[in-house]
Length: 283
Image: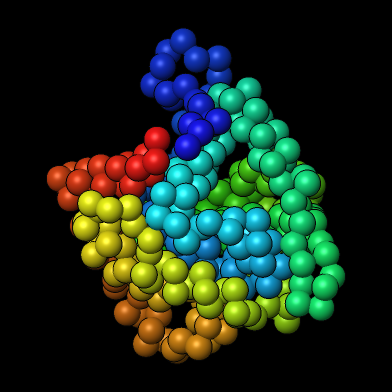
């Protein structure tokens, strides 16, 4: 298995060139440093999969994603890209962005009627971007991290730099929570849980795990259920799940309890070691 192409210099290295696209004073660094963002990653995947072309393009170009070694190697690449984009120097982030754009450029997907589309169409990239941003902002708010509405507005605005990195016009990306809400209202009629979305959902509830990773096999499904429960009610209903206010209250309580649990060093470090073993199983 080839090693991940993304590399970034530690933010604590005094010799590094600069503080990258965001920097230590940014809301982005504060949000993305929180351990509860592991839940946000899964939530974003569920949200993104509701765009049929996004999930079809993903699965059609990742035919071995159900294989344990490949699935976790892909997670490692995605995770390291996000870390490089967020915490790397400007040059490191831009290099990672160029790599992602180059990978996506030749890829296509096919709709059930035979229509072929590019996976890097601007509308699809924007949907993926907004799914990630909305999920991080919502999880930060509901898990009682110390962020005000103004902070989260700043986070959304800062993330336009991330959008630009993967090929989205900066001005097309939402710059506030209100603009993000407006975007979702506009695009919702185009969304639904297609067969591929349901397949992806089932995959996360019964994740493919390399042999010898019992911790992940037992620990991931509850996190997946929590992430799913934090989706907006309309998104849960598209998947056939409950979408009422009682579900929202339970999800918020679950998030707060999970944030506290993740703050336990021994528990969290054990989980990270298990993830590292899975991600490098084929190396």
